[in-house]
Every structure is written in structure tokens, then in C-alpha cells.
Amino acid sequence: MARQNVRMTATPRPTGAPPRLLDCPLMGDWTVERTIEDRLSGRPARFAGTARIAPAPGGDHLDWREKGHLESAAFTGRATRDMRIVVEGAAFAVLFADGRPFHPLDLTGGRCTVVHPCGDDRYEGDLALADGGAILTVRWRVTGPAKDLDIRSRYTRTPVA
Picture 1: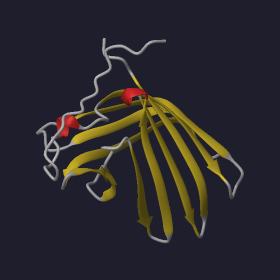
Picture 2 (picture 1 turned 180 degrees about the vertical axis):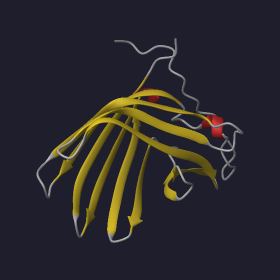
Picture 3 (picture 1 turned 90 degrees about the vertical axis):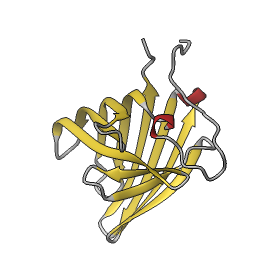
Picture 4 (picture 1 turned 60 degrees about the vertical axis):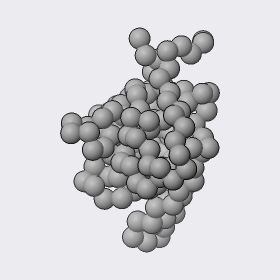
């Protein structure tokens, strides 16, 4: 299936100049498929839904909102996740919904690797854009005293009508 009308902005800017929020390559609507492999329990989980990354009221950040259906051993039902994207230096950063920092986001070269320490746990992430920005893959390896997770997400851009 040919991809048409995909909104993808790649505006060159002077080196070191901060990007504009509206130039974030993740802006738009996506479908999301996520698998979670819990290597300690052996119980997998799956999330399927949508994501919208759009300017927040006031325009100081982008809202990253996911909603869908989660199926796991502990829970089956509606699930949501909210994050924010802000300009940070010469790139972007992802924050939790309450404003706490999560990780830097610099997809200038199409890929970024990030680390998020969370107490005794360590989140190692790899984010990559493909197919002209129509596909985003995200992989998180989560390790810690009580965690050993492999989380893989595939975001497919919803074509603009």
C-alpha cells in the first residue's frame, strides 16, 4: 500500500539552533502495536491502540497521548498513557505527563538511543524512524532487581486525509 499525504517536516536549521515544536518529526496520528515480554514471570502483554502527538493548549509543548486496549496476566482493558515533548537545547525531550524528565529525543539522524535511570531500574531505549517517517519503532530493555522486560512498539503513521 503506497503511503500518501504523510506529514513529515524536515526543516534545516542552523547548527545548535533550537528546533520549533511544530518541526518535531513525531507530530501526527499513529496506530500503535506494543508487545511486552516479561522475562522474569514469562507472562507476555500486548497493547494495541492509537497515539496522537499534537500541540498542547498554550503551545509550550506537544501532548503525546496513547489510548487503546492492554491485555496482560494482571489486567485486560482500556489503557492510556500521556507524555509531553518539549524543546530542550538543540533537540527535543520527552517528559512524563507530570513534567518529570524521561529522555532526550534527537531523531535528526533518524535514530536515537537513550537511557533513563529509574530508582534501581535502568531503561535503555532505541527509537528509530523508517519509511520516510511513516514508521517509528521503539524498543526498551528494562533491567533491575525485580525487572527484566523487553518492550517493543511499532507506531505506523495514519495518513492525512
